[in-house]
Length: 331
Image (cartoon, rainbow, N blue to C red; front, side, top):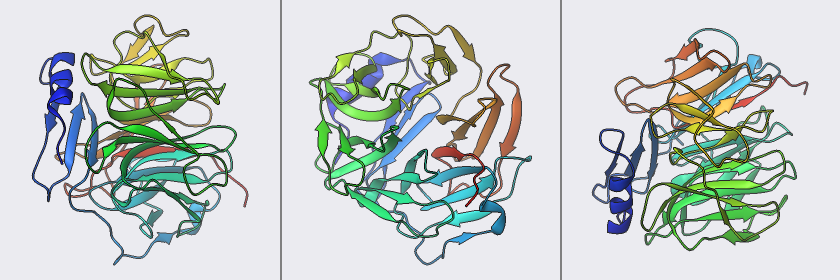
């Protein structure tokens, strides 16, 4: 399996090096896509740490939690949302195989793109093993999103036999797919984001042309192209004002105002995977998937100043790919 020539041409024409590159390796090595500072991997040898039991410290039961996933390490680290360069207060490994994209729903459940197990798994807060496994047979899920109705979405980079990718949908409570979202120009599908109206936005590498975005209105399987400018291919989040936030083509974090028909209204000079807010939107967190200096960054969303840098729990063989936050809860 390899990334197709069409996808390579699309990537090569989208952004000048060194902002974007594609590395396709032998079967024993995962396929890795670099888009600016964002990194996605799939295939190759499955990475898991079943020999290492999950553990969760009492401090993780009630306070705010920051999750960071490691595709290469096969685990998810838990951190307190408060502190500086925090040490892990837990680690999830049970049921995980090359975990990547993360999302937390309004019931404090963590959903994980279990990339090389062709599934999405769900953990209840404080649990060391999954309570649900959502079947995504034949596809590599790299990103995950959940809407306010409990519908789970996974961006499938591509199938085990190659492109095109798609988006798998599981209605609340279902462990088998209830829909598959496709689009004529999908080649490699990488990023997701759900807005306050439960509209799903998907970023992808097309069969030809630059990185693209499509919107699936809530409940619809018909994609509508988004004429956004300067957006890259990666995960999307939305702030309380309805602004779209994701990495832009200048390798910074862009903020686009609705209806997303022009370039970003402002940018923040930060970079990394899966931008994620804390509850009050004071801090935006990103995973810096870099083998030399792996870390998770926390930046002030208003000013762009650096709040926190978490290096504890990451090594050159276990770097962070995904990040998600869960506010304090009473269990």
